[in-house]
Length: 169
Image (cartoon, rainbow, N blue to C red; front, side, top):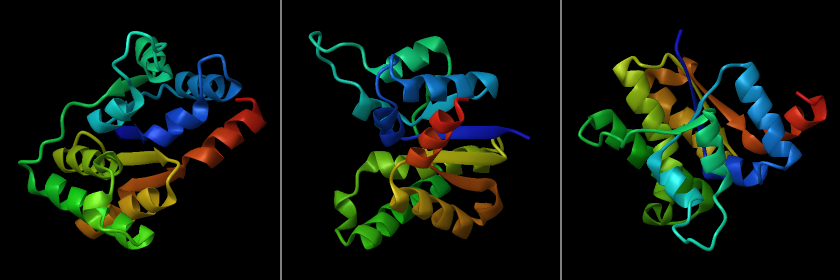
């Protein structure tokens, strides 16, 4: 059984810097459980700044340490990827009462990456770690409509970190 752990921008923002206990708890969890968090390109782009005066972002430390990686570009030529991307944008737009074209594409990319990997058979279980409830619930709903309901789990990023820190994992 192949598990895919997809992380969003909010998870890394909530973890803070590598010296932070939240960051260290997530790193320990990943290492102990042999997990590599996968970030869609759009998420990575949100987390990084191309400015020589800015310290390396924490996500780069995670990538360098091997417990996070950046996914290959989404394959929009695959109909399921485009459908899921559009579906999640509509879901979030409805949940937040705003136009779908104002929804960050990085949010929709989480579910699109899950759909791409599930449909290709390179993942049989997907865990989406996000601090945005609408994104997590939307991913589960949209991917369920594509037949992957039993394969996708939304993990509330804030609760995940809080539980790790409280448990000193």
